Structures are given as C-alpha cells and as structure tokens.
Amino acid sequence: MYPYHNMIKKRIKNGELIGFTYVDDYKNIGECLLLFFNTPPYERPVRPHKYYEYINILENWKIKQEQQNEKEKRNEKEIENKN
Image (cartoon, rainbow, N blue to C red; front, side, top):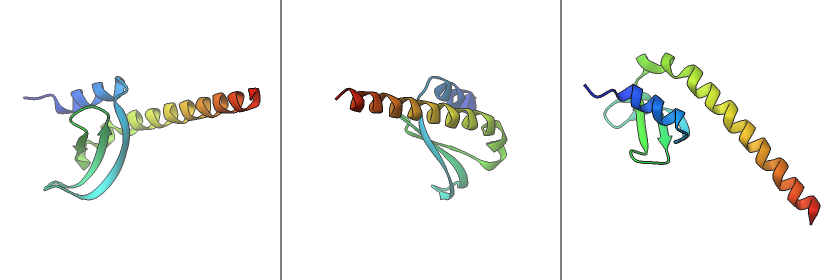
C-alpha cells in the first residue's frame, strides 16, 4: 500500500508545501483539506478523518511562514534605508 500520508508529511518537512485550504467539494471526494506543493503532484487532498494528523504540522508551518515573511520585510526595510 502506498504510504500516502507519510509521503505528504515528508514533503511538508522538506519545505515543498506552499499553501493549503479547506474545500467543500473536491473532485469526487467532497470535503477535504487541500494541500498545495511546489513540486508534482501539486495538489494533495486529505479527507476529514485524517485532519487531526495535520493540525500541529500545519500550525507549525504557518508559524515558520510568518517568521520568514517578517525576516524578508526587515531585510527589505534595511535595503530601503541604505538607499
């Protein structure tokens, strides 16, 4: 059996995740958590009964993204101040 969720979690850990959203009606699945990656396959759906496995992972991912965005903003301000 293909380790679907293990591969998704590995991709998240490797930094391939670029976003996610919850959708009500995804391609013959219905409600799901839809994960977006920067490498193929670009979309991976997660069914509701597996959401609990992703709550902490996605929360940590969001925190890292916010920290990265703040760092980029600080760098941009430093560049502007030098000019």
